[in-house]
Length: 314
Ligand code: UDP
Ligand code: MG
Image 1 (cartoon, rainbow, N blue to C red):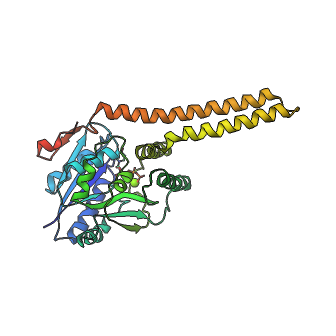
Image 2: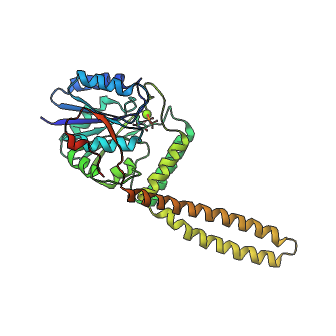
């Protein structure tokens, strides 16, 4: 019998965990010919999330948990999950029921045809989402595609089911500053997309502030593309041209005070230089972080009994 492993990252989700588990169990009942393994990854929650997960795990032998020593972020939680599950099919999904468990039977059926390695999901609408967030997300996916050549569908979720082979390939990518949507696209494999209506969170609050999302987008872009580094060359050409035009203009126009025009130009160039230095800094800090070879996460507690498995790789 095939085993389906469900990885669920959780951070301060005391209100959602039980509701999610109940919904998932309903779907598992419908798929009674499939063996299930549910791995909750508690990403250093400071509320009752870990206690609730542990309680569920003591009552249900299919439930496992990894509990981090602090909050390492959703990407680290997904990575840890991928390294510890053993099913022939692997699912990644959020705990807040924004990723509907009711899609699992259809996803499973599609993979069983053998035609695809992955069934991914995207939202057909972005209702319930602040318009500014939708606008930035839309722009980001376009820019990401232009800079990297990798296609991440607008509205794509991390929610997906993949074959063991694909999950193993992703788990073998040890990079820090992970951006799963980019990684899923980078590893390739035949992917089928399913669409669903955007759902509201069942309880609690989103953990992503606008600034956090902006940082995540920048992280994703610089992880997969060196195009931002080449911006400096483009700016250098543009500003040299501007400099020549300004100088000629100031020399031949008696009414312009050359000093003020040049001051403006110098300020603009200075701000651009800082911008480019910032991009260099982003890449340098990435190199420094990768060089330290720190683990992506530290496991404080788990009920997985394979001790070799719980060591975070160095
Ligand atoms: N999450 C996590 N670590 C974090 C932030 C979020 O494991 O540092 C989990 C969270 O519990 C949820 C999923 O990642 O299961 C998605 O988070 P959220 O709903 O806040 O994101 P959104 O749906 O608003 O993009
Ligand atoms: Mg959510």
